[in-house]
Image 1 (cartoon, helix red, strand yellow):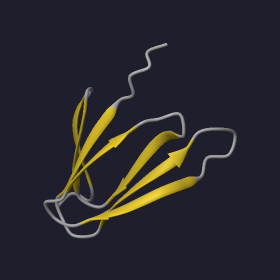
Image 2: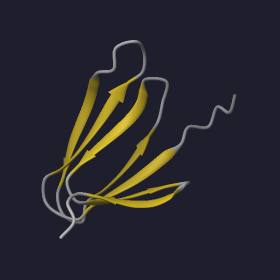
Image 3: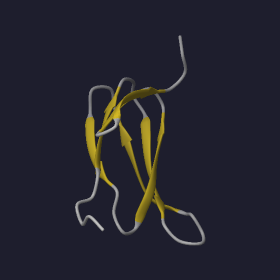
Length: 74
């Protein structure tokens, strides 16, 4: 198994974007959240504790698999 953890980059396109880390295991739970304002960037990493990252609000998300935008379409 590769010990390098994958990073993602989240850039807020509006104020109040929420980034939520979800746990691994039999019960998926929220374990961390951050609020970003427009233009702020967060670099997040998948770890032994984080199996998923949820982004709520308009943001650009970049991964090694490509880019995607979250939020509602205008």
